Image: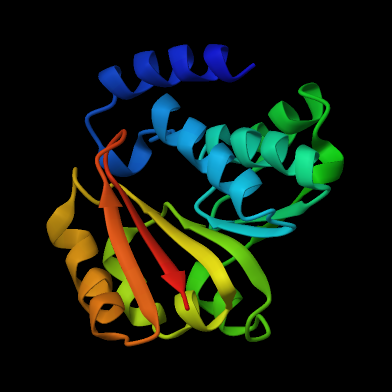
Length: 185
């Protein structure tokens, strides 16, 4: 399922000049790292902001199958394709989809309620969601921000907020398009 999606995404994105119309699916090696991290922190509650075509949704839901966890995937667009792919993979019970603004969704979550949060949406908006990306993490929880190396200027405002927060530790991992990781201590 995932391999087929990645092949389709490469073909679609190569022919699409408008960045906002590209599928922008998660890189395979980034997916492997995220799945490992879900298992490492024994995540049970995972939130992803930015569903796109559901590549990261598939990866996270499969990893959550090993921890008996649940994923909430939030996007401003309709997520019918991702929903169908998840059902076809037999992982529909692991995820729910929410249509709306990612920042507003995070603002409505209780403090310390998320084990892992993946931000893979419009990077220029992340800093305006502050402090919610960290506030919602449980101690030892992880924030993962994709495209940290491919679009560093767009991720920089959030990275600066994270670096200035004394209760947060960060590292950028050169995998895929770069994955900024932050943990709440």
